Amino acid sequence: MRKFTYGLPIALLSAAAVVAQLHKAVASIPLEVRAMARSAVPEAMVKRPPKAIASDEPNNAIAYNTRGFARYQSGDKQGAIDDFNHALQIDPNLAEAYNNRGSARNDLGDKQGAIADFQKAANLYVQQNRLDDYQRSLENIRKIQS
Image 1: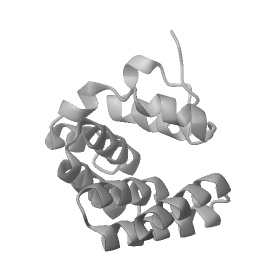
Image 2: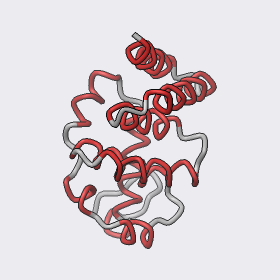
Image 3: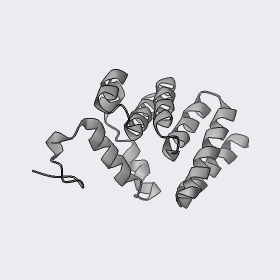
Image 4: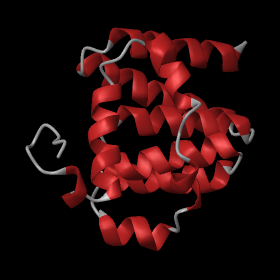
C-alpha cells in the first residue's frame, strides 16, 4: 500500500487531506510546470458541494483554495471567490488564496480589489522567500494598471 509523507495509508486520508498534501508539494515546483498542472484540476473538486468539503476538512484552507481554483478554471468566478474568502478566514497568510482571488476579482471587473489582493499576496510571498511568485504578483498589478 502506498503511503504519503506522514506514513498514513492513502485509503485512510480524506480527499481534502490528499489535495492539501499535493498542493504543498506543488508549491515547490517551478512556475512553468505549475502552469501545466493547473489545467488538470480534477472536475470532482468543482462539483463537490460546499457542505461536503466542510464536513471533511472544515479547517483546511488549502482544500478551499484548491476547490476555489477549480471553480475559477471552470468559469464560476463568484463561487471561486467564496472559496478563496473561506480559505482566508481559516488562514489569512495563505498567499495563493489572495493571488487566486485577485485573478477572479480582476475577471469580474473589480480592479481595485484585484490590486489589493495581488499586493497582499506579493507581501506574503516576500515574507515566505518565494520571489518568483512575488514577481508574478507584481506583474499582475502592472497589467491591471496599464
